Image (cartoon, rainbow, N blue to C red; front, side, top):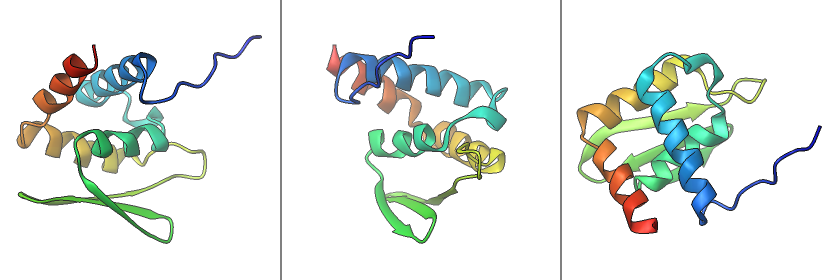
Length: 107
């Protein structure tokens, strides 16, 4: 079985991966299977600041009072309740359009 090469997030295949993640995140039907590293990439796209405390990744953004605090499960997936928290922040703060605008800028 051939493995696909990993994509650098600065090239177009990263955009496709990001869009797939966004669809899965907003759909809410795959919270159990979203990879932790993929979920952590979304706040970066939305220009959140990251800091780390042990195994936790904490994301904050000026003007947004909610804090995103993520921690991986042993199998490398994100915790479902944290996926839901990220989805709620993205939707309630109107951040979906910011992801889509960045996608248009990259093309």
